[in-house]
Length: 227
Image (cartoon, rainbow, N blue to C red):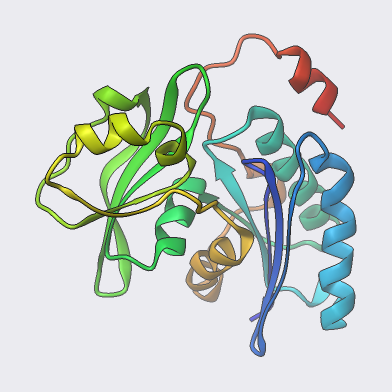
């Protein structure tokens, strides 16, 4: 299968094109430049694989939670490309992409949500499929939902921003911590592949981001980051 995937839910702008011959990826620190970087990176991976949009089987994107502006950019670009090429779309949880990136079997995924909070979820892998142990939520690090058992891997920027609080919160349950991980597109493509293989996905106009935190106004920096 040929699957294009993008993620702009964090400060990383990430694009991957998954084919039967492997993954072609582009990842870069974007800051507020996601809107200017995303399409050129998509063009690069298509050119390198010598594929056109109409030769793809689907387009996946990091649906969130994450940066409000970033989620809107990814969803909007994917909707436009998928509508033009009549392709199905599939949104993948950014937190699940963190779990996939970790290589672990039990994962507490946490992204820095600013304002002293984290986007949080927990997953376990059973028979090569991920199961939700704790659904995506927004919380303070020192009040994160508890998990059962031991040997949980911590993954994501939430552990970089709130390491001490999370380690204390999960005292005895937490194993290795991979705070440097981001929800990159290659893992989103990997998670989307079985969905597209069974004919899943939705039409372009039905693609939606997952915000979690209600948003009533844009900050100045978010306004400046809009396309």
